[in-house]
Length: 403
Ligand SMILES: Nc1nc2c(ncn2[C@@H]2O[C@H](COP(=O)(O)OP(=O)(O)O)[C@@H](O)[C@H]2O)c(=O)[nH]1
Ligand SMILES: Nc1ncnc2c1ncn2[C@@H]1O[C@H](COP(=O)(O)OP(=O)(O)O)[C@@H](O)[C@H]1O
Image (tube, rainbow, N blue to C red; front, side):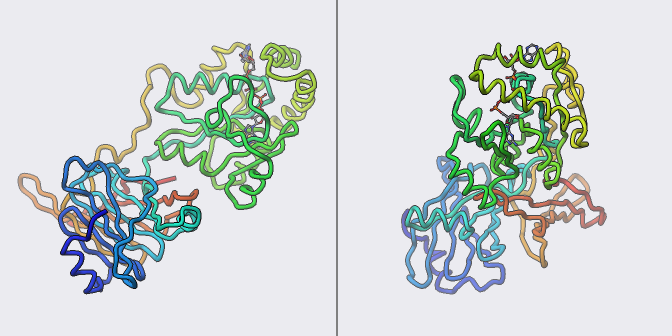
């Protein structure tokens, strides 16, 4: 990265003492945290497809070239940045759809510190602040061989934009056709146990002699893509999710009979005889617990596959006439506008702008509630709640809320 433009060289000497550490000029926006100034360059140059970041260390007076983990596609014309605390900057892209307008620049979060240690240089990370409204995740449980995977595959195939699969971690060995990162994250027990201790898992359980678990990241990746998350987990896992903060729908798939379950497991041909017997022994306990535990909202009998699939779709509120995602309300809005001003009152960031139609000009505001921010998985700060306020009518409308 080249030298800082004159405007910023001057301002760096002045020290950015304007309260919010907020300055912007042309396509650049700068904000100060501690001894460092972060200069985000949106690039007026149409060819620059992403934002770049420069860091100026006041104690050394020189720009540092940082490693930027992830970049924001450059599709806005006006933007601003505001330091939220010692480790995060809120970056606002003017003229962008609401769920693409707010980004966090993580400058000193634990994730960034970890990366800095391993890369040995200055690091910043981008993460999206607000995501579209997505329907509740779906937890699917049931004994091995009942058809969970088959039903989920059918759903994902028919509605690829609607559903996303939560890719679990497991210590079991991959089957022939299984791909790492797609069906499971296949992992070592010691690594998984370490990650569990560090709080990276939403739930985990020992199933048929192996460790399985859903990482926070696995669920959030799906939500970030604006899709409804599907979790294929056992009854113990479903119980843990029920007790967690994740508000989900719980579905238990039942086999028509134990004999049919055995037939399906054997026909699948993916387990040894010993593993099949273990799965069948566990199936009876799982079915009993599934039916009596009160965890599950719905029970589906997978006798005829097509009928069961239709029932599943009905239950999820989708049928042949619905093939688009529940649209985020924000997609209709083009906020915040290119010309806006940003201020902060306690835990609220206020973005003000003017709108005008034929007869009226009015002042509008978007309020971002910082108290809703969650740490999320590493490098994934999120959870901003945004409200639109019409300051003329004094009416208040919630325009987006994250889950
Ligand atoms: N608790 C928990 N269970 C999981 C997870 N992923 C898979 N499972 C369950 O582990 C069990 C075994 O899965 P798998 O080895 O793929 O065998 P299959 O069920 O016979 O296809 C199934 O009941 C899955 O629902 C997870 O992340 N957490
Ligand atoms: N309704 C059904 N009738 C007959 N076979 C089925 C039915 N549903 C699934 N299967 C078959 O049973 C086997 C086990 O299904 P799978 O989806 O792998 O189960 P799970 O994921 O619950 O372990 C697969 O070979 C699948 O094709």
